[in-house]
Length: 327
Image (cartoon, rainbow, N blue to C red; front, side, top):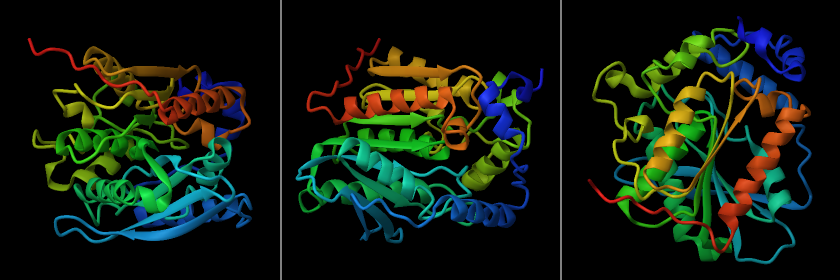
């Protein structure tokens, strides 16, 4: 049965009107995305939220990284922080793409949001985006006092490829050991470069992120390692053999998302590794459903679960991972 016939009715009405996404023309797709977000982002900023751009120094020869810091105007700190990574299949994004989302989170949770502007593939393959995300987070933690952030309550989060980057970032934070995070919020994350799960074959509809788009995104991001066994687990987190000791996680995905199988399997592996993990799969929901149709009932359930995860991560008594013994 085609995915469109299985969609939640509130979602299907909108998705059927969306122009097809042609990622075979990346420049054209980027232009279409910019036009779409120009219509969505009206330029009317929330007066209760301020924002400012900063430059985080690049590490190990990488260029500097722009981060945009959003904060409530009249709320004293130190405040919890969401470090946010935008999606875009590793090839599509824009610095202001998630500005309204970041303002909404600040307003809802009286927190700081730091959004990182990562380099896009295929011009900049892995590890460009991963190192950009890490550099921005390292800068955020190092400057927590100046930013009036409580460094013990830093949640990392992202959607789609931003969710995959967030999962990879959690691995880097664990393995480099320079600082800690309190939670990882993985929203329909792009985790598995092999495109080999049953759900990866299910979604071919051009109106949503589909199998063809996914192959183009991964090929662009992985460059010469695409299709080989040399792919870094920091690029494709499902390749990481040991998930012990990671920050607690929330995984949110849709039943009809291309990524649902890899997301569910990753959440199961986190739990098996002793990482406190919560998993939600939304019936009849496609990739990006909460953004395309925010008024739908299923999207409202998603928002409630997302906000609950943030409250957990922002808590002063957030759970910690309990690594299992090596057998």
